[in-house]
Length: 291
Length: 291
Image (cartoon, rainbow over all chains, first blue to last red; front, top):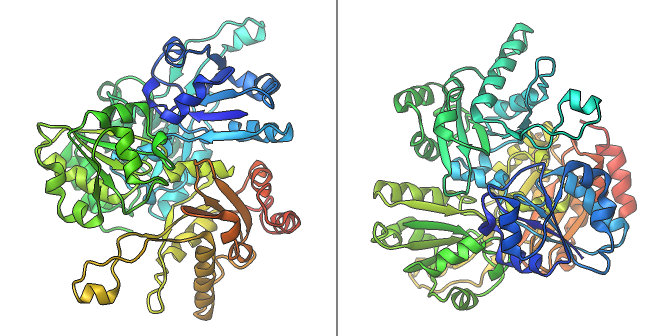
């Protein structure tokens, strides 16, 4: 049997009781470690499970899935995923390959940032499509997210922005030379995300296609959702460009507010505002009662 | 401290290890039992937690929250919610009231149907806003969901439909006579949902506002997501009108497919099709490559 087990969002105790019982009886245990991370180390997980944990990087999951699925018709294999097993596309692919090999599959769900973001106080019903924000480089600033934000905002909906993480990445030079030397991991912060969003808005404006949001658009930054040190901050995009110190370490996520926002949502979220007066002013001017 | 603890979707072992440790040490334990249900009985939970469990119905949570929050400045109170604590609006309200009373709050997230629906193989990125479908009566057929489905479909997105449950409802006669006699619980099935959706499409068409979906629109029905007897079925809305037998008991949810659908999603979902040839034909005609 192939077990896809969600680990939740924070530490080793966020696994469900069912998940823990299952992982303990599996012959092999893989941890998917490139679409998200837990806030604890692999060795802590190994001790907690009483099992060796094999780190499955992108290369292994996408190219060497035979290894993961090997003999899973006869033995129990656990594939652990931070959050919920179906949060990321790659795992659908793994299941399809398991199906082809007639391997039985069982899924143990858990909290995903896609729903846990409700802890901001914003209603999940009012969210449109989720987007991802990748690290820009000097020459690569993919802006396909912009049209999706526009679609959400046109109908008044919030947008959850998932922020890039870079784990086990090689520098171009090391890659060219075939050296298996990896850069230190990087996790995008809410501040970086807000800066990149405003940068794209500027570029779009110059091209005559702008106006989806601006420096005074309201947003909520979230850090370590579901963990003991969970932290939220709300404010304008401009204000969130300076939120690194308030929010602290990874992982971060962001929500850009839609206009179809319930008063209860604002009451909840203004509590986290860097500047409550400023929040109230913009809320009244641009959001309250606007559809 | 007020602990909001998600129970996940299926049985008593879907609570997280952290959640279980917390509920065991709480002085009072409430179970919110009107926006969703677990598939196991209260007595099983009480035995599992080693704690009495107080059922919190809508009336208690909305009007008698003082009782729930009583002395939570000094003692630990657990408020258990099926799925994730922030899935439903009501709980935001409870937290706001706790804040006013300066009660510290801690949230323990869990799987929600909003993310666990990814187990259908449909990508969470491709979902628009979620809608709720309530039981129609002869004189009350609320159709506000229709415009939201239209908004999602206009931009090619899937729509998750959450289905009504009726727990501890009084008949009009009993309500009028003040008799505290309750009807047996009712849980909407995918078949009922599909029928109601087609009924509204007919009414809209007669009013000249139709065309959001039709009998041949593709959809996926899901039952007991995350549980051992989890079951999916895919097909046209017309086909899903007869899916009760395939899907079995509650809880059910439904997804109406959007056109911005990835081939991988169709590969995954057609596996559950009541009629694969029909699925392929409509997929090719109306969905594949259509934006």
